[in-house]
Image 1 (cartoon, protein in one colour):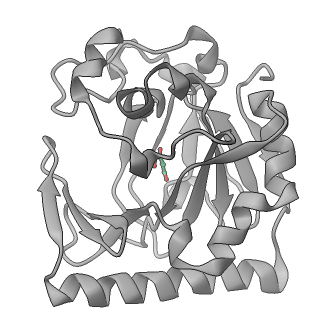
Image 2: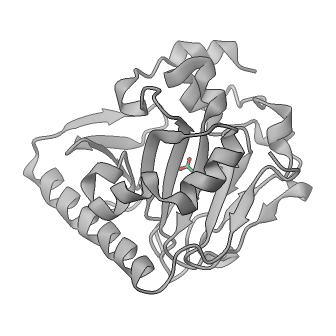
Length: 253
Ligand SMILES: O=C(O)CCC(=O)C(=O)O
């Protein structure tokens, strides 16, 4: 991986194709909300109080402070063919093969983050690695994300921020007082190194699981929707086939 630990691909999607992906996000949201309203779902509450509801093979993560608004859906690619096609799109798989150092990247999990205007909540400083480690064990080191921007992202609508180079230090010390046990200890993050990545719709950001990142709440009047496609070497089990084993956090700092 290059020095800053992330790669930006400008203008990978655009025009009618980008509009189709954004429409797909809205159509998936409509279908999932309709099914959630039917009540035939199972609900789990995370230690931080966030509610996750299983609908149609996806976990619907509700916005904690905006009743009826979806924060994210994962996995999501099985819910729309336009999403599913992204797993084999050479514009993603080529750079991802380079990043992972493998000939053939395959799916681990897909996610749709809505970060809606006015209500999209924050993501505190974290690495994706601890969550993946609790599911995939050491194989989590071989997973990386392609984040596809469906809307322009700026400081005002909760653009993603990163700590360049943080991936090189491996798993970061976690905040032991925080209920999920998954967040980075913010007191140990050098916030003077924070870089807010303001990117136009159609961009793609690629980064490994150990890059420290966060995003502010979206208090603006502009949605900040993104698709996150997490790749790993082809042939390995996907997240949905694995069990979350919180006890594995004990292996990490
Ligand atoms: O969409 C964002 O702002 C953050 C995404 C992220 O870090 C996550 O989904 O784990």
